[in-house]
Amino acid sequence: MSDSHDNLTKVRLAMALFRDAGCDLVIHAGDIVAPLTALQFRAVGCLVRAVFGNCDGEKPGLVKAFEGWGEIREAPFAFSHAGLRFLVTHLDAPVERLLASTPCDVLVFGHTHRPAVRGKDGAMLINPGETGGWLTGASTVALFDPDKRTADIVPLA
Image (cartoon, rainbow, N blue to C red; front, top):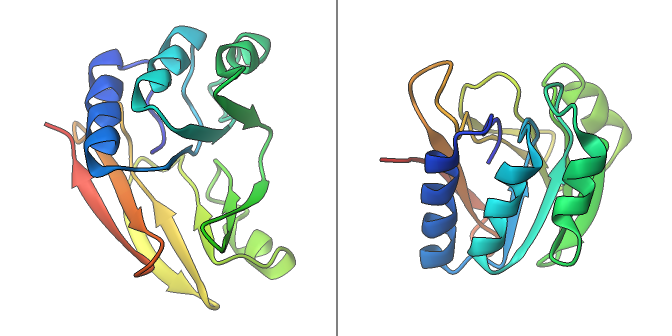
């Protein structure tokens, strides 16, 4: 997920979707905005990893909100999960440069508010679109299956 921009209703819908899908990791590619919104992620019941976006001004509060159940860092954030190498960033502009410098299987990014799933240089690039829906009117997230290495863009009702 990405670009939730404090839309608590859509964040709660996303958490319910991820919980019902049995997700064991949620990735947020930036622009949560407020710690109050980050606290909603606890409801998913699994690890949440996130990066700061350009609209995340209250960084110390966001770090504190993630304590004990998740983590948020400056981008790029590289980690392994389910036998895959993930790389998470917010801005779309460094995607090509990141792929060239940091080997990964899955690169998750946001910022454009436009969902996209594509392959590039052996990696899967996923932009889940905007969870908040404020800019485009479409609230979306992505569901990634690490076994099949497939991702689906899912609209939030």
